[in-house]
Length: 234
Length: 143
Image 1 (cartoon, rainbow over the protein chains, first blue to last red):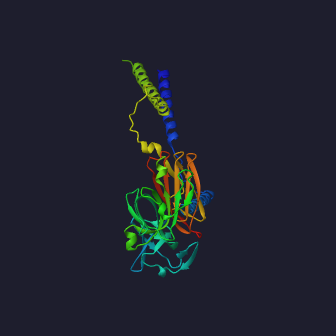
Image 2: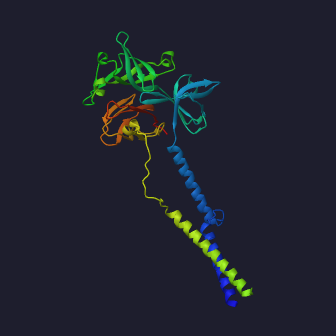
Image 3: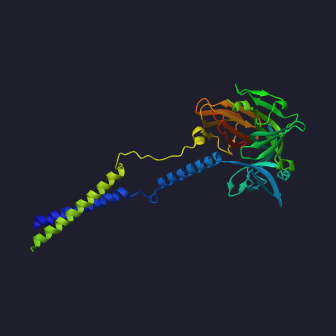
């Protein structure tokens, strides 16, 4: 009888022991128990490092936003290429406003910002509000490509259908840089307007503003790069 | 029935339960570690082949759209189909080159302010469809 009782007790002990081991395995250390001064200092150091890392990450991940300027009740906002409006919060003591002229920039006042100027703004963005660190007044560009569908040799313009089916009219002016890709060597060669043919593909860059002409997708081309049809017939 | 017999039955049942629990846990652990398919038969999954996606790999790894730089030029890195032609155009620079390896890296100068960079890939098969991507990169020499 005694032997049986001992065996029963031992088996129960073994069972409890296995349960305790399982509990130890899933237990996790708690971070709220550190109370000593050394631990507090260490946690402060960690906090500082975390904050520094966060600021570096913020700087690294900082993005800029460009769009046409809108001014209403002295409040500045910009409308990006997708038509989304962002309010630009300008702090007179912090925000720097510059006008870009080629490769240099000149500091201007925020009151110099006018409706329809193209502006680029950087700074922390929350929702659709940019707390501007810097505002740059810049030129807006459209850089696109498409197939030439019409050439007007009297008024010197070409019509282009882009990949997104958008139709563009490009005025080829005296200052327009006209180049063509050699289909065999892929070298870029200078050309004249007469070399351009319907069916060629053209890559172009043009300045953009909010004028009626531009809103109808008509631009004065700054430069064009033509890929002749022969390239696609290989 | 004697008392001893009752204890023996109870002990036997308890031991059995403990043993079975141990066995269950051990079996579960080993199954979590390595799960094997029941059959070695290979599954045939029918797929529709999209020739466009097969022939035109085009991905820009660097830089990110709307990224800000403090340098006058950047490296554009990405992956494209071998032997395809890539045209990179911005208002200040045009670059045309054949993608020799699948990965490419090109240096691109930046203008102060906003840089709209258009990247168009013409596949090796010149009859194939071209692909276009656009990046807006900002060069601010003071940040």
